[in-house]
Structure formats: structure tokens, C-alpha cells
Image 1 (cartoon, rainbow, N blue to C red):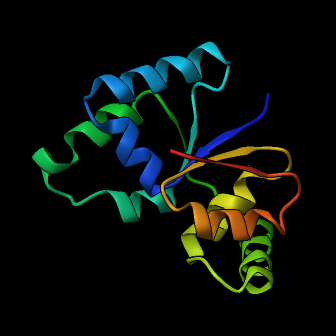
Image 2 (cartoon, helix red, strand yellow; image 1 turned 90 degrees about the horizontal axis):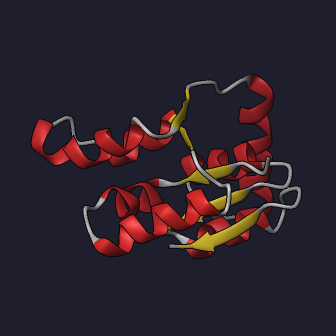
Amino acid sequence: MTPLVLDRGALSQLAQRTRASAALVQALRDSGHWPPVVPTMVLVESLQQRTGADANVNRLLKACIVDDSVPEALARRAAELRRTARRGSAVDALVAARAEPGGIVLTGDNADLTALAAHAATVTVEPI
């Protein structure tokens, strides 16, 4: 199965309790791209450590695969992508590297992730 990896923007959008986000989650389920992978480093950007502010994100995370592994090889690959693309944050680079090979990144930061994915092994970027 092709992994679907969420960045901060996608996680935040999908966590909103709106009809649009509910429809997108249903479409992802129907297409077989559910549950998505959320690397733990995305949580650093997404969580505020305030119960009320984090409630929707925490609710969504229960339905996701939270990936807490960043092996050295993945970190080195992310560094290579970031150096080659010459843009994007360390977290963005890790998200792109985690989607390799052949995965999809759902993003709120289309420009940086597209630049990183251009140097990745068949990673598709879908803006949210």
C-alpha cells in the first residue's frame, strides 16, 4: 500500500471539525489511503501542549499511524533531500523522506514539499 504521510498543515486541516475535512477523510478512506502516517516530528510543529487547543489534533491522531522512528538512514536521507532541494525545514525533509519510495505527502506547504519531492524517489505531493 502506498503510504500517505501528513505534514503539519495537512494534520491541522484534517483535524478541523468541518464538513470539508470530514469529506476529505472519507475520500481518503474510500481510496484506501487511510490511515495516514504522521511522523512524530510533525507533532512538534502541530501541538501547543494546551488541552483545548490540541483536542482536535489529538482526536485525529487516534485514527493515524504515529511513526516514532527516525533511524539514522532516514535522517541522512532527509538531510540529502534538504541539501539538494536547497529549501524546506528539517521536518519537511523528514516527511518527504518518510514517504519514499512511491508515497504521497498531503501538505499545507506545497512549495517546499514539492521542491523536496522533486529529489525524492517517486514521492507525490498533494496540497490540502
